[in-house]
Image (spheres, rainbow, N blue to C red):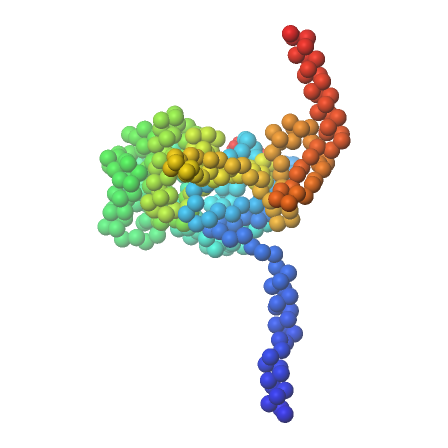
Length: 338
Ligand SMILES: Nc1ncnc2c1ncn2[C@@H]1O[C@H](COP(=O)(O)OP(=O)(O)OP(=O)(O)O)[C@@H](O)[C@H]1O
């Protein structure tokens, strides 16, 4: 008898197990990726004034991706990069990079994270390199902190500078390098300790078009050859249009993404297609591009219609009236001009 009771108990989950299962079922599904930000918030307080630099930003970047982050000045791009690179701490939400929780990370772990897990390239060429060291010494420096042997440091520095196409600059100081060469050395420095992610904040901002292309090629080289995931903040259309994925930040939130892919038609001709997507968060919220809503005078409310394979978003009656009025004014203006 007692054996049967034991068997019954073994088959039926106990209260603790039921609670665990309920908690599991209630837990929202997590995004997957090397970088995952959910509902990320960063509020700055200066002289009693509150600035919400990030207002619930969602972002997921897969391992090995190269992503461009774009957005108007003040939209929160640098704030995001500051958090992801471990230099700043978010106010709320969650941010995880290569398994590191950036909200709860301790001071000591933060230093190790900045030195080993991520690499950083700044816009100001002078900020990336120490002026009294040669290019090779600059690349070796982070490896010294990481305790890498001298011979290995030298070899790796040589390899990285060669990969970035600036091997010939190894024994020169930053003052003897062009802006483009300095940035390519900076990318080598940022990759010295084999980081999982390379962050670059406007790395081509101070450079002309031809040089920008070289820097972009060097970033791409690092992404493809070293396997490092790259997140680059840029105003430069040349850069953002050449990556597979561009994420646009608006008012501290990710608003739209452009995904680019190469398609091959029946005749074998290849074509690059770019499609714009709005980001849908876990609560079903999405931000419509202002170019779209302004064109149709959409303001406070839109009409939704569920179709079999898409959702239609329509202007409400007020927006339709506003658009009709605007069209009338435009027609009159054109009539006057004619
Ligand atoms: N340390 C700070 N203290 C107070 N406010 C700040 C601070 N850093 C950024 N901000 C504010 O937060 C908002 C986002 O700034 P952020 O620098 O992240 O924007 P950005 O998109 O990188 O802009 P830009 O393209 O001009 O560099 C802005 O309103 C900015 O003024």
